[in-house]
Length: 142
Ligand SMILES: [Zn+2]
Image (cartoon, rainbow, N blue to C red):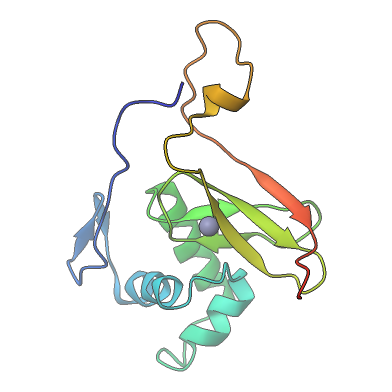
């Protein structure tokens, strides 16, 4: 069964601290960039977007910011084999669908009322603490 604890929601507040994390200007900009376009960008995508507002930021710094945001669970790192990591600010429990045709990655939510234990035969006593569901395929356009 999924843990009963509700998903933590955090606002994209301009607060100095979020989740115990000191929000530097760079971290804030990186985080806001992820919230603004929830298309699961790579670190390089984020770098190119943030550069408009922080022209002196380096790719290494963006990597650093992303790492810290992931560590503090404000952002999820999404890995598809042999692809650069993508970053997702959606903290709800969800999976990802990777469209091999366009490279697009979409959030995939659980259907309402469906629990993991309804579809998976989990070992007795298993308490799922984290899920990672990655689906690959093609999005057919009709
Ligand atoms: Zn996502």
